[in-house]
Length: 406
Image (cartoon, rainbow, N blue to C red; front, top):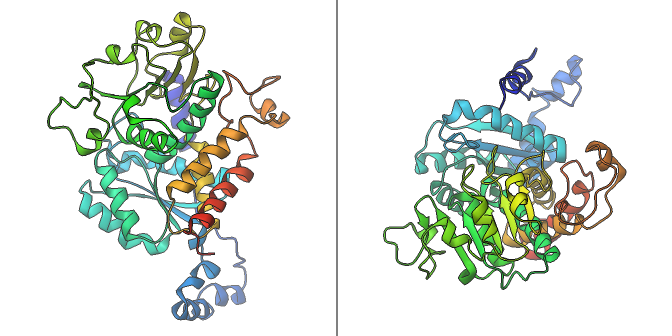
């Protein structure tokens, strides 16, 4: 980030009023009659009704449209363990995106503990306030246990966006890329660089969609995760491969697909050049990818490339997912966001990219045309059709899979 952009970001966040969010009321509070309804004695009426029937809480309070964006600050963006205070701008940013794209209200909560038991208990204790829990920027492998325990304990959707939101957007784009490159998900050879929350969740979801475990090579900072290694975590062990390959360069040889959710500049041009015909490269580290599109395209003219950046084609952006997934889940009064709902979101995003792009999207991106192909495998964040198609797909899947309370 340039010094000018750094200062512009600071000015944006400070401004005349620091931060990005505030709380306001949408009910009148101008007269003594308004006051008597908003608070005592009028507020006693919904209290009595909810006490008699707890399900009425959504009729009389914000709960049904309120999500907690909650973190311990242990894995914030690419900045690492910066702690709860430094994570707050990101959580406020998440709140803004929820509201902008899906009209969902958010309280951002930064918890001052990185003990799993304490964090889980904190979330459980405050859960009655919310209709859903969006876990954010929690380091692996703790994030897996935290999410699992909260899903088991709570009767509202719990969703770790760094895991499943990322996985859903990757899967949607990847299915389209596989189709364009005339490959088959059941036979492609895939390399995933990064064994944290995003990498593991992506592999889990892709396997649900047809990818074969025997065709996966998972690579972390130590090299290829193989069955020959000892003392690897259970999370990584599920993708340990029977292979003699040890390095990332070894793994990339003849691979059809590369997914990078690790760090900048870890992939060389030689590695991309060694991949199979018509390769697919998702270099998703932010702000700098594992290899730049310029470097990758310089050695391969037959690849499809995606990054996490908005200034390149095919941006894998979580804002395509979490606002709309929660919108569908909240509208369905779902008790969880299950695999059926995640797969429904994948297919909704995948199919939307194949439709004619509206003029409003072209105007937003200052281009004359966008059409399904190598440079457009995933919808744009400002496509207003997202709010129509993704929540409906998630809603329908919640109802059909039996987790809706409607």
